[in-house]
Image (cartoon, rainbow, N blue to C red):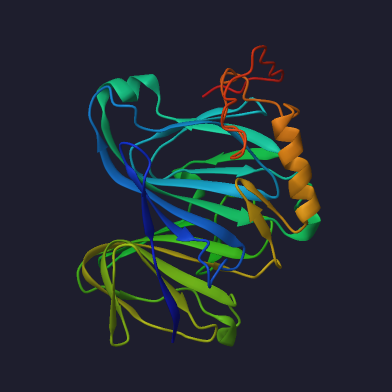
Length: 311
């Protein structure tokens, strides 16, 4: 029933912690999900630095940001400026290349407050790796809900349980947020034995759950066998993210770049180092350098043309 269990590796980013779940050395991906981080939970004091991720590039993937608490401000090289708050999705498709930043809005930084959420990278299928970049913000109205008997479920992306989220995905997948009261029993979308997705996992973001005769706790990713059809029972109030999909093939990952071609990643490294990738329109005076070029963090004459999309 259980293929393996992955414990999130906690990393201090200065003021708050992130739990790195995927990739893992013996399990790189779940379907197209190639990267999964749990941000927080954290409580920032008024005036604290909070989230301050400088502009950085991506290729060959889509990023998905989803919050339980708090908010973040996204800016990208297409000209989008967009807050994200709990119950919403920011879905950014890098394709052949995009640059974005994620920060705490100055007003929220002055006020302080919580931050708790998930960030995922979804590898694009081979035929879409070099697509034009794009950005989608999906509000609560575009994310189907189910609530009954102590179970709250929101379909964050993809298709599951006969519903479809408003996010325009590039390959078969699902991503579901469960809030479970104590003792609630439920089940993930079906596996390959029942005509469902061939790769599935559950991440316990808060609390504990029981599957069969085993108990799993906060910070653990439970990878299911392809044909398993388990019942999940909550032990106390719990938050679980359920994810899965069909594999898109082997992918290479280097820093923020994901692709089926190592040569393409090498080209992206050269493009970023040479300043050939446009910075976000309203956030173009600093950036994160390549890991081997850490001394260079600003550009003397930043140029970021393009339309500006309002918050």
